[in-house]
Image 1 (tube, rainbow, N blue to C red):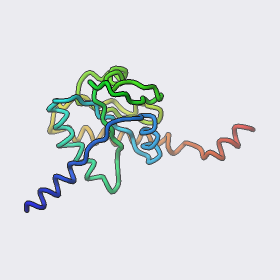
Image 2: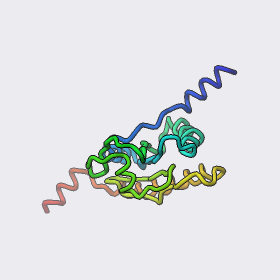
Image 3: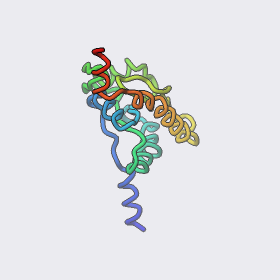
Image 4: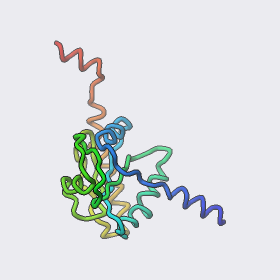
Length: 164
């Protein structure tokens, strides 16, 4: 019994990586047919920790075999530099301001080049429905992402039509 508790907490204890290069992270997500989810947080935010612990880490662990999202974290108070979707170097705080994030936790759903796929999931006001809201946003984000991935012509076809 104790071993099962330790193993389950280890599975859910997967950390959410900090954002470093959002343009690359969005391209990697797109190549896998997944939205990039940016988890906007700040230190000592009990709601951020609850979203991470109760919803995001279990979702990541549950979908490890067949991922449904790529996720990175941005601390909205951080001075550490990250590369935004245009490869500009900004602090986490500057990037969050540019994205108009005012409340944490916020989840942003992005596609190639930083295109917003769906409205962000802001706050954690109704915990009983948070997972349902998250699942609906993920489904919608994948639907909005799918046409861009499916309709992208192969490199060879694109160059053949560009010349003629």
